[in-house]
Amino acid sequence: MIRELGVVVDCSVPTGNRKADKKIQEAVLLETMNAVLAGSGKSIDRDAFTALQAMTGFNIRAFTGNVEKLVDFVGDRPQITRSDIVAALQRTKRDPVYALTGAVAARNLDDALFYLSTLMSEGLDAIRPEQILVAILNQIRKLLRVKEFTAGSHGSVWFSGCPYNQFTAAVMPIVQQFDAGLVERKQQWQDQLSGADLDQDLSPPKKGGKKKKQTATDLSIVKNPNNPYPVYQLFLSAENYTKQELVQAFEHLSRADLRIKTSGDSRRLILEEVILGICKRAQ
Image (cartoon, rainbow, N blue to C red; front, side, top):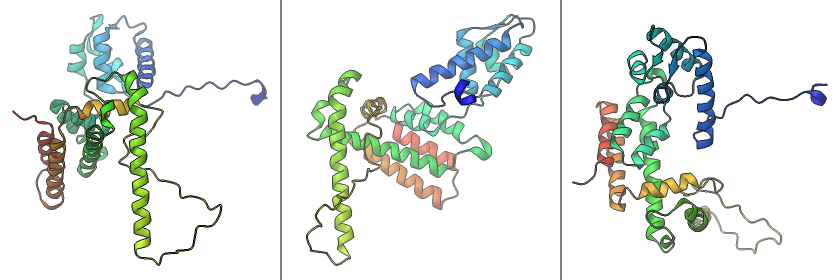
C-alpha cells in the first residue's frame, strides 16, 4: 500500500559547496531563523543574518541555539544587529581544508592565515599539520600543471580574462586532450617498468584480447568533465603565480615537511611561515 499510494518526501539538504547547494542551505537557515523569531517581536537584517551564517555554518541545531541566545541578549530592543552577533556569539563554523587551499591559490595571505587558525583550533577534531601540508602541496601541483598547459603548444587557447562560456567551449576540450596524453604516457611508463624485471613475452597478443584500461592520474587537471567551473577557477588562480614562484613553493613545503618531522618547533608557526613564504609577493 505504501508503494502504491505513498509519497516520498525528501527533506535532506545538500551539504556541498556549489552555488546551488549554498542557496538551498541559506533558504533553510532563513526559514529556521524566521520560525525562531516568530512571536518574539525581534528581527534580523540581511547583514546580520550573513554574519550569523558565517559564525555558525550549516548546523541547524547550533544556528537555532544562537538565534535564541540573540533574542535574550538584545533584551527589549527589537532589532538584532551585526554588532550583537559579534558580541554575543563565538564562531563554531568548521571550515573545510579546501577553504585554506583556495586562499593559498588566490594568494590571499590574510584569508589563508585565518583558515589555518580555524583548522588548527578545533581541539580533538583539528586537522593534523601533515594533512594541511599535503593539501597545500596538492594545490601547488595543480597550479603548476596548469602552468605547464598554458606554456605548451596547447596553451594558446587560454588567455588572461577568458570568459567562462568561452572556457567551457574552447579550452576544456583541449585540457581534456592534454590530460589524456598524460594518462597515456603514464600507462607506457607502467608497462615499461613492469617489463623491466620480468622476462618479456614476445609472442603476439591474442586475437580479441582486451586492451588495458588507462588509469587516471592525480595530476590530471580535469577531475570531473561535467563540472568545468572548478577547472576554470584553477586557471584563474594560476594567474596569481609565475612558474618560478610555484617551484619555490615546493622548496618552502619541503623545508616545512622536514621541520615538522625532525624539529620541536611549533607546528602552527611552521605552517604560518610556509604560507607566508608562498603567498607573499615580490616587492
